[in-house]
Length: 211
Ligand code: DX5
Ligand code: ZN
Image (cartoon, rainbow, N blue to C red):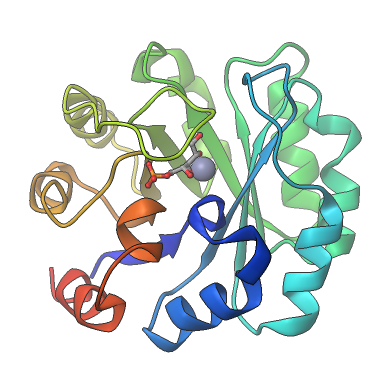
């Protein structure tokens, strides 16, 4: 079964509670929260205050994707705010293994993400330390971009390397490319535009869960 984590970036910022409630009612598994720092990616998004507000209001795992150069300074803050899982990027400066260990020590779900240009081989030595690999299927920074089908090979490669944890795809994921993603080895679909703009998210969610 593929899990669905709608990316809140595609929700209406003035109607976030309504939009989140809609995807929860439709049966989503996690909420994906994209944190952007305007350095690692050319965009700014949310602060820990949003994670805290979501945590207080909704009873659902908060899957926090840190698109930040210096996540080590914020892991504790996001954990206190109510993150269920934290994903950091492999491309950042600093001691990535130590940051993954810090997420682990806080008792959270540990994720490591790779941008499209980063090969699976670059994180092979870290696979034993993570619960999930997030394969970016667009350049991180903005919702609504086109899915890069070349990333299917990276997912297959991670499985060939023997990775048995969860594999998540993020960026341009839709009902159209999910069958290929599933065949490659996907477990968790981050869906922004496709889920928040869906006419019938419950029906979509059922179809995806049945894959
Ligand atoms: C991109 C973000 C994604 C994005 C996905 O940097 O990490 O989570 O919101 O949005 P869609 O599904 O619209 O591509
Ligand atoms: Zn994301």
